[in-house]
Image (cartoon, rainbow, N blue to C red; front, side, top):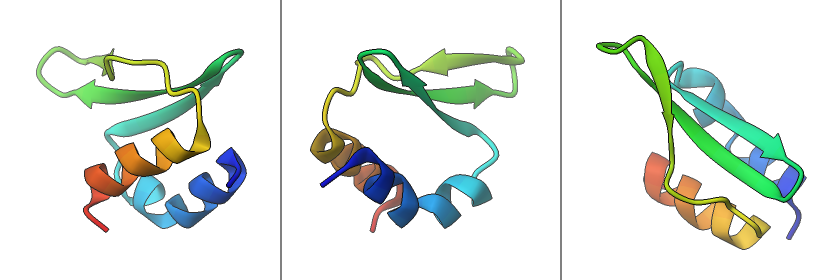
Amino acid sequence: MEYSEVLSYFKNDIRNNPDIEIIRLKHGYMIFYWDDVEHSYYHSSELIQSPEKLYEILNKEFEK
């Protein structure tokens, strides 16, 4: 499994949720969430360093 496959699988879910951003970093990915009250982003607590972990987190996030 590759990151691109995971992102492609969840593409519509990500696109339809304006409060989530998935950012590619040098050593993996991080998920950021928009906080409407604070008008700022906060991030998930971990650097995601495998496509399998990204899939697991997004699957839970979007309850597929």
